[in-house]
Length: 150
Ligand SMILES: Cc1cc2nc3c(=O)[nH]c(=O)nc-3n(C[C@H](O)[C@H](O)[C@H](O)COP(=O)(O)O)c2cc1C
Image: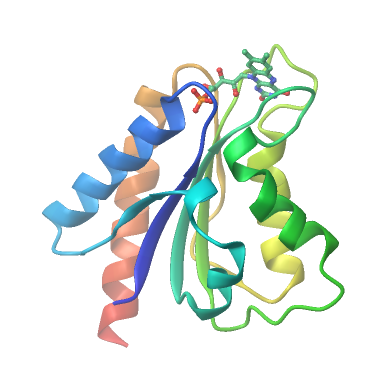
């Protein structure tokens, strides 16, 4: 299965979570490289089949620096066809800020706008994300197993 995990992070939480998710997927037999968004050309999304996006939000609802190129690519494209792509977004944020988990919300919005298919509902996590992600990851694993059988 062509499956990639990419993360957008400023201070490391999303990177750590992306690696934990990668290990969970691996334990269930999936091989999913975990990549820094800043080191992946956003055009590569055009040939991806399954992608998991783990991202925090910074500034005033902005993407972290290493996710800004991906966001601009999706936001300012005139036309994109991502119909081949199945995606899942998990956002990290803090409800203290007015634009809670905005970066994850924006990725979800633009991926869907360009025809990509959500594998499951986006999860917006607050600072207690370590308690919140496991159920979502279990659901993701079930969806991926079903996709493999099709
Ligand atoms: C300067 C600053 C700005 C932030 N802005 C937002 C924001 O607009 N919305 C939000 O939901 N969280 C915001 N956060 C919270 C971070 O997204 C949250 O702490 C997250 O866990 C950081 O993950 P990271 O280490 O992967 O970057 C902000 C945090 C800082 C320090």
